[in-house]
Structure formats: C-alpha cells, structure tokens
Length: 387
Image (cartoon, rainbow, N blue to C red; front, side):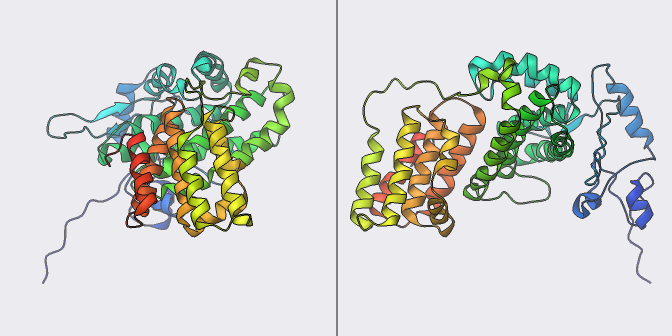
C-alpha cells in the first residue's frame, strides 16, 4: 500500500475557503484562492502565531489590514499594525524585513512625497498626508505608491514580489473607496479625490512593470498606452472639482511642467526622426502628418512647454494605432519619448518607466539595422543602458 503523503492541515484558513472546504494558504491580507477567484477574504479565526506577531508590532499610529471586497465600499480600518515581510537580498545573511504602515508613512514623508514636483513636496507631505488621515481611500493610495516606490529601487525579484502584491491590495482597496467618493464629491473631499486619482494613475503605470507572485511582467509599451485611459479619467475628475481645488492649497499643482532645460536650440534627434519620415513615408500622406505631429509634440516636451506625461495623451489616435501594430518608425518615436520621460526631471516613476520603455523597444527593434539600430543605441545610452 503506497505511503500517504504528509501534508499541512489548514486550521486557521479564511472564512471563504472553509465554506468551500478547500485548503487555504492562510496568507494575509488575502489568500491565493480568494485572489484568483476575486472573492472577499476574511479571517474570523486568528492563528496564535499571527496574533502574537501583531501584538509585538502594535503601535498607536499604525493602520491595519483591510478585507478586499470587490462589491463592498466599507473601508473601515482595524487598529492593528500590518507588517509586510520582505526577504533580504541575501537570505543566508539577512533576516526578513518587516515594514509597518508607520514605516510606509515615514518613507512617504521623506521620499515618495517628492514624486511629482520638488516645489510641491511639502504640499504632498503635509496637506496630502493630513487629507489621508480623513479619507481612508487616499491613505490606501499613498501606501500603494510608497510600496511601489520601494520595490522599484530593488534588484532582487524575490524581494520585490511581496511589496508589489501588498501594493496591489492597497491599490484595489483605494479604488473601491474612490468610486464611492466620486458619487458624492464636495468641497470637503475634492482634494482627496483628485490626489487619489493621480496616485492610482501612477500605480497603474508602474505596478505591471514589476514582478509579482501571480503574473509575469507585462510589456512596458502595452502598459504605457493604458496611461491614456487613466489620464482621461483624471481629466474628467479635474473637470468636476477644479473650481474647488483652485481655491485651496492644491491650486499650485495645475500647470506644473518639468524644470526648464538649460539647452538652447533645436532638439537634434528630431532631425534624425524626420529624415526617416522623408526616406520611408510618402510626403503629404496622412500617415506622414500623424508621425510629424508626434515628433513636434516631443519637441515641445524637450523645451518644457508641455509636461512629458501628457505627450502620449495628446498624440493622434492614429499614432497609437501604429504603436499597437508595431510599426518601426512609430516605435522609434515612442522610444524617444521614453528618453524624455527619463531625462526631463528626477521623478522616480518617470525615470523607471522611461528606462523600461527604451529597454523593451530597443530589444524589439534589434535586427532592423541602419538608422533604427543607430538611434536605438543612442536612446539606450541616454537612459543608462549599455549599447
């Protein structure tokens, strides 16, 4: 008779797995079964080890775990800490690192608050931080973006994954609260709604570029194209609340562009891009005009007349269709936008996305030779990649 394989019995599984009579991995804040099914995940039975760990890390200012409920808008926060265990870069030498929500707020206040404009760092640290204490969904968005900021600076995928998984849970929870708030916008919550939508936009761009426990990293070009939808969503929210926001401290956020360039003159890469158009695209055709408009848009970004992020929103839909079809010239123009994202200021999420975009597109264009190969090498050099 074959020997029975030993197994670990789940005694403190979530309520949903117990109801379905399936084995639960007991993973906080949400088990893998509920994650895969998109179900609510709640734990009415607490493991003695988990309770002991929570009590050791309790602090008055920390915020605890939240059940992710797709259909629920209840964002009540439990007054316990919720540490994320992050493997050390060398597991044989380092103990796991625990990051509490207090630690996340410290990281936000000292680093992540600089993610949009240096001049506005104090605004994000002070005013946005205070708004987050009043609006749970904004706090969730802050936690999500801070975790992604920390993850983007790590090289070890094993250390990155738990941070990204935790960030996605906070991101989803923030979205639930934001949807509820959008149905009842007022002067008292307009700042929180606006900033939350901006933070979620950045999270939605960066999170798919990082490794997670469940999914492979998505193509950067596909992810960045989603920016159009998020930017349009943010614009819609701004249209609803701008008259209120302009009367408060966030009015300084409007009209922000990257620091002025010290370079005076033409943007040299534009000449190379136009040379490709002249030699490969019929002059005066609709396609030629579409690509020319995209190049002109890059020039306005280089001269700091337009915020770099807005370029992808302002280009023609025909240009985005060229990208989706993988047309080489459109991809080369797109790659130059990645360079501008990287060099126009030192915002971590722009530099990270720009570098990933150049890395991916240059690999896609390998083998085309000639001008495309030469320009790819130049783009890679601009973002710190080897030729």
